[in-house]
Length: 126
Image (cartoon, rainbow, N blue to C red; front, top):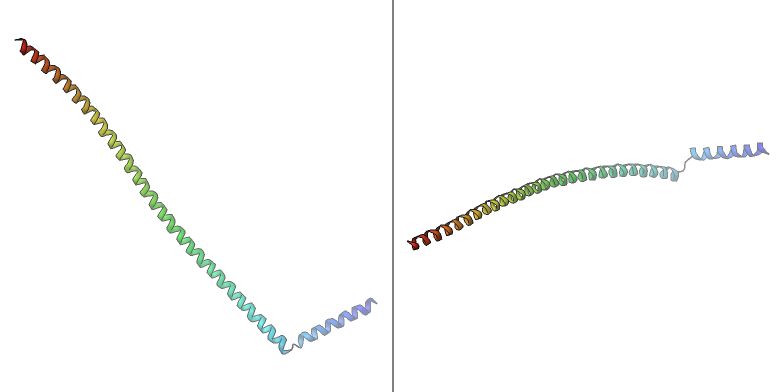
């Protein structure tokens, strides 16, 4: 029985090989269409990869531009902070000078008032 199954499988394989060799026009057309579709698929994949690569480069350039813009903004922010610190220290110095001038003014006013009262009182006594 095994020999009969083996012979049957062998004859079916031979028949299949014969059909393969004797392709009908429809089979040939289908194979050509399959080759065209495979070529179209390969071209489409290449185009897709090209598009992905192009978009990646565009995204990288945009990221670089944003990074440069961020660095510029950070530099401007640092400059603004330095300006604010400079302004604050300048205002503190002006306030300190004002306090000194006010103390001198108060001392001069006090001594002038004291001097005038003493001189006026002495002159009135004479």
